[in-house]
Length: 384
Image 1 (cartoon, rainbow, N blue to C red):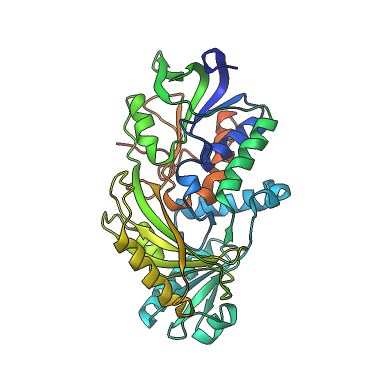
Image 2 (image 1 turned 135 degrees about the vertical axis):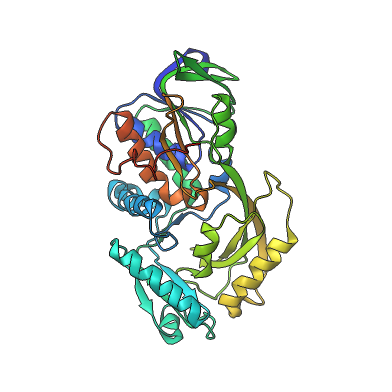
């Protein structure tokens, strides 16, 4: 079917992991669904990330609630499909390099446990090294989060879209959106390079480019790109069993600093390679290779695992995280233009939060009571 003849209950702009999850749950709920993507499946952020499904890095607040909810969706609603995207319940280890960092981590853990997160403080390095024998013995201690997990993001995106299509969803790739159709003050579809698609709801799942899509409808959505690099080593005998990162990472995620920030994140893969991150900087959509960022990531990773000092870096890649100034994703219908919905601004948590976001939106689109209240002032879309 050509886009020029298409009509659906829901048209989703963006075939990244958030768009794929939203398409799956919308189609599963019986809504006729079309996904439009200007490139190929997962050609943006979803192909340039690590696939985190974390609760450990969330500060107390609405994103943590969404993270806990999304965990249940991954582990319960989607349990039968876990092998399709290599779901690994590997657990997360957050480590602290000083007594001051340990006190801050202990406070965070205490608050998180009150909300139902499973977390265990490890008061000395000996306990940390029981979990990760190669970790730096100079560290002070840490905290273990058994529910942190990992998926392969490319597989998750492709497979969620495949499942959506099995439930009737349609997908148009290489199809750029050129306009948002409106009628009587309501979004009623999109114009594309291939023609017009009419829909009862337009869902903006365009990741770092969501602000541009919103602008097509004449509304402002302050989603900005935040560039990050990841290093991939050659396969090595040194094993890293968990997602391991420094306690400072949580603060960097919550920071609004535009400059380069680097906090170490290290994990192993089933193939034996080691992934190292994480950097953050707001440089627009500049894809220029940054030797400074790469060097700082490597140095910070070695601070956690000195045994990797002689390991060769096989490749490095960068991507753009969709960043919102309030550090909360925009999820729900835009009150300025009914019929236009947003699912954007998840920053580095998009993979983990995608399925929770998709299920909530499908409930709302069906007129059902949502499992989390999307009308709360701290969960609804950005307000000027």
